[in-house]
Image 1 (cartoon, rainbow, N blue to C red):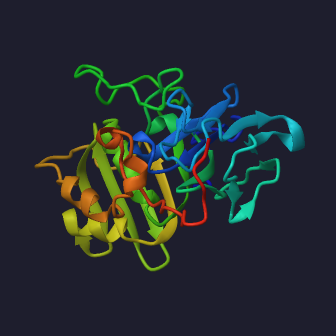
Image 2: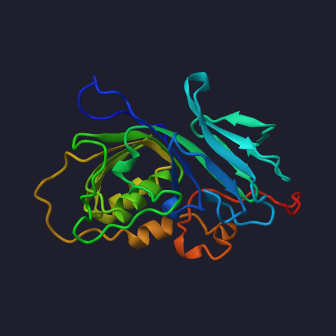
Length: 280
């Protein structure tokens, strides 16, 4: 998701956000913050826990570096089975770029760089945990975030990423308009506290429009808290079955070790582990 900028004045500094997309994360996304160091391994105490015998206890690390203008790097900690980025073996460390695919068999993690406020569709994380903080009934849809009311989050999407964005909006009870543009068609989805109240795509409306938009293979999107109809009425459009239907097949390796209850399945396949040995 190479995203656009905040809404509002052009003089405002652009805020970059970084994340990993993977089936091991609750709701499919792990936000990365420059001040933190992310240990990756089989050890349950790892910031990014990968429960597989082919993963070393302290397999790799993702951390921020100020070199080359600043960015995240992934380091192989001398693991038995190694780390690959875009199918190339990492000898020591690799400076990550948007859309890089990090492979630690049998897991794939997609690195994404955003310009905009990821907190618009996510809840803050509890320190040291990849779980998102639940909202109580009173604060649902009104959680305080850093961005102002005119902020936007926009950019490209590939494959299932638009489905993942909608999952975050629904789960975190966000309000706003998600505009979608594909090569052949586009439209919008309007949410009110996580409920889809309006969907339009070409000549379609309702659930048919939502299905048409969420099955676009690639394109651009823009999520804004402002805009859309203010006089919404009628019953919400049920997205539960549609999101479940459009999610990729469950990756059993990603839910090993008793994690199936907190994992949302995303567009990240398992790699072939036939040549890997058990890690120490």
